[in-house]
Image 1 (cartoon, rainbow, N blue to C red):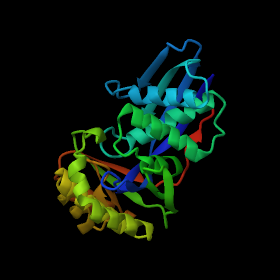
Image 2: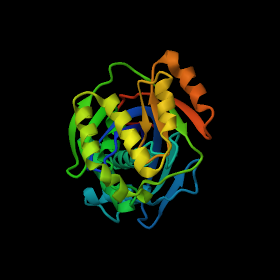
Image 3: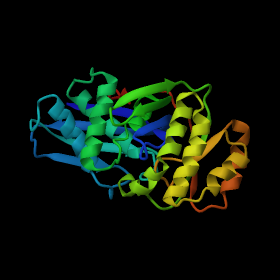
Image 4: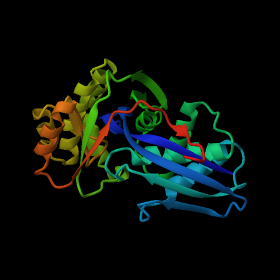
Length: 292
């Protein structure tokens, strides 16, 4: 049996590392996963298309967590394939998207995809924790990836606090530096110095002032983690509605309107790296039919 899924990426509004409380929003970059079940439980292979050098532990943990949750551990092996246009280790929720995609594809292959969506997300978070790719569990990132829109969460309780729809679809520009930064390597102790200020940003996000919260969060974490704040400030000076560090970086995301895209691009051209263009996303994760 085979299952396929497609989920989208996300970007940070409030990083949960300092407080355990986070907020994120969906963007239309994507990850797809295909899980083909095998009768031999020892036959578990993972192919990360386009990034064969990346660790496959997360995908394997996702598969194992699903089998465990259904009471069929060690009954199946699988060939797992993932493909994505989300840059890895840049703060754009590539791990959350991959976890959601593999969990959903595995459930589809087992014909058990009728679980409550939030339970599907929690399975992926459990796998991410076991794989060691997250500090907080990244429930906020995983929810924004799976459901789209704007979502704030209590990561310690794996609970959604609040959700918002976008007022409109916004263009998104992303500056991606050439180096990677894995969340597990972040200086958590230094980030937690910001506890009171990040709590304030979280409060603002829950009051509907999420774009303002994103700027505050990005500036604070950039200072704490040693990133240049100029990229975000240049975007704001060029007409961005909001801009800030996503996750633990190094990517910087700008939310804007169509008429200011070129201005922001031009302001970023002096920085080393590449610029991606995307849009906000409100589509939920979905199972793909085999003909797609």
